[in-house]
Structures are given as C-alpha cells and as structure tokens.
Length: 227
Ligand SMILES: C[S@@+](CC[C@H](N)C(=O)[O-])C[C@H]1O[C@@H](n2cnc3c(N)ncnc32)[C@H](O)[C@@H]1O
Image (cartoon, rainbow, N blue to C red; front, side, top):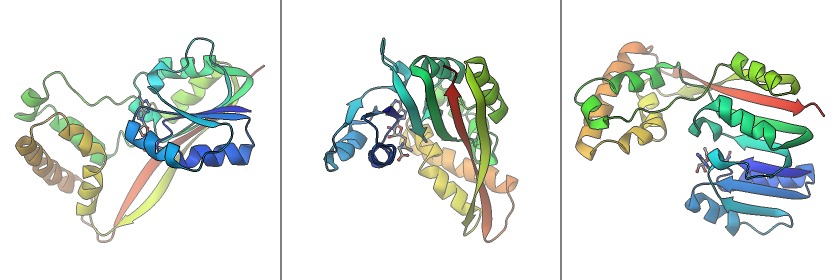
C-alpha cells in the first residue's frame, strides 16, 4: 500500500499508520517546517518520508496512492467540494480515503467569534479578511463521496464529551485554537478587546454550569473508490 498523510504534523500518526498497515511507502505532507522538523527527528523508518507542501496543491500531476489519510487538518483547506474531487483523483482504483476533522462551525464558541468579525471596531481592522469555514454537513460529504465514485461511503458525526471546570474554560481553550487565527489579523491591543467581548457574549450564550459539559463534534469519513 502507498499511503499519504495530509497535514501530518509531527508525524506521530504517519509512523504508526506505516507500521500498522505495513505500507510500502508513506508520505507525510505538512506546510509547517516546525512540525516537519519534529517528524524528521523521529527514528527513520524505511519507506516513510516527509515533504513541506500545501494540501491545497495535492496531488501533483500523476501522483497516485492507495490510501489518503488526514487527521485534524482538512478543516484548514478551503472549498471542500473541489478538495475532495482532487483527493478522489489521486486514488488508485479501490483506493481509500480516511479523514477526521472537527465540525464545530455551528457551536456558540465558533458562531460568536464569526459574529464579532462584523462588529466595529473589529470589522474595520479585519478589512477583507473573514475566517473561512469550509467544513460541510456530514450528509454533504456522504453525497459528495458517492458522486465522486465511492461505493458505500461511511460518514459519522461523533460528539466527544469534554468536562471543563466551567464556561470560562471554553474561552481559554479557544484562545489556543480558534482565536489564535483571529489574533493574526488584529493588532495586540485590539485582539485583547476582541477576546474580552468574545468572552462576554459567549458566557451570555452558554450554560453557567460547573463543571461545564463541552460537546466537541468531529466528522469521520471513510470511503473506497469503485474500481
Ligand atoms: C492539528 S494538526 C494535526 C497533525 C496530525 N495530523 C495529528 O493528528 O497529529 C494540523 C496540521 O495540519 C497542518 N496544515 C494545516 N493546513 C495545512 C495545509 N493547507 N497544507 C499542509 N498542512 C496543513 C498544520 O501545519 C498542522 O501540522
């Protein structure tokens, strides 16, 4: 089996995939040189290699694999209808696709940040930029895979339960993930004001419970192309 791991990060899963599938070659792709440095630092394994590339430019002309794997990365890539068509084109007959990505687009933690992007003074500071939200509904991926020639696609939405100390912990969590993206588009003092207003609006909208149950949704996609 020839495998590609899109958005492989530090390569932890890339090596594991390679070993467990007894693949002939496994290629890890990531755009971050920092992540790849950690991946390459792992003990070298025959058949595993890494390239600094953008998933949006995968596949290169004629590049074919038997398995496309991606964990927690495709939600950073725009236009999933076009993306999945490109991925399907890179699979050999009978090739498989296995993808996991977060699906939090309709959760208050994400909706509030999106709404704030259109409130002054943030709107003017963001200018043309808006955080893109390419993740589709689960049923849209099932339909898309079927249209792309995958027989019997399996798509699941899974809710992972996270029990946090309180609602404020959601803000702290988002500061390390979602809000980091917003911070790159605002001067530091305005980002501080953005987080304050985000906290105020979010805490109005979610239960004031302690401990706080935070349901984290993820989409799991598997499909095999018809030969
Ligand atoms: C949350 S990490 C997941 C890493 C790994 N798949 C894992 O599960 O441990 C997401 C990775 O996707 C990479 N990434 C995000 N967008 C990318 C893109 N357009 N092209 C290549 N890599 C990308 C990031 O650099 C990061 O390493």
